[in-house]
Amino acid sequence: MNNPHFGGLDLVILYPLLAIYKALLFVHIPYALGFSIILLTILIRFLLYPLISSQIKASKKMQELNPHLQKIKETHKGNSTMISQETMRLYKEHGVNPASGCLPVLIQLPVIFTLYSVLQNIIKAPDLVTLAINKVIQVDFLKLSGRIDQTFFGLPLGKTPWELTPHPLGLNLALLILLIPIATGVFQYIQSKMMFPKKPKEEGEVKKSDDFASIFATQSTYIFPIMIGFFSATFPIGLSLYWNTFTIFGIIQQYKITGNPWQKQLK
Image (cartoon, rainbow, N blue to C red; front, top):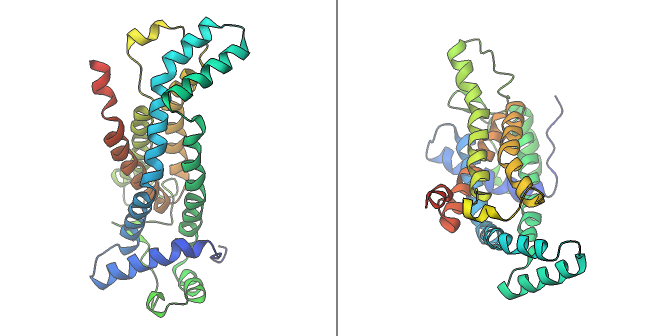
């Protein structure tokens, strides 16, 4: 096993994670590392809330304009110059910037990759993690005096669901462990479904068989959750804990902004 190594950018995540971990230990909360990951994920989600909200709102506006965009394509079929001009006029008229949804994603990526790196290192061998953290942390309060308890309700955060099945304690526990990637896929499906809701039938009169956006949305709703669920079976449970927490709060945020897409479809 390679020694844990924390880079300069990792400290931005490591410091608050350790602060939460030490606070939970102080009040004698069990499974402190697992709950620290959850609380840190919630904190990051709140910090990114305004950016993610703007991304969701931009995506919602683009979906609302999609029928108009399809009409423009049908009206000026074969005339790419007119399609481009009318599309830009439509965006300007409704105050939509197609690129506005990209900035929040670009800002989130380094945060997500850094947290991923920190979690990968912190769920390695407990003794090596303690030495590595004490070496890079300059605040005495945050230095570790012992090994980190890397279990969460009996499950080792550093192990993958694949590694834990079949479980030596029995088939029932092995099936319970496999619920982790299944739950990850389900949560991702719910979020994808909310991001790309099915349009009412009356809007479907505009020909959309050649609409790349519609095809992409439909495929993403099913393929992406399956991929995430599969990957979570091969990633450490600690990373799935972060991802599921992030996704659940994403579902809540999406619901607050766009409402219930299934309810809208029934109207």
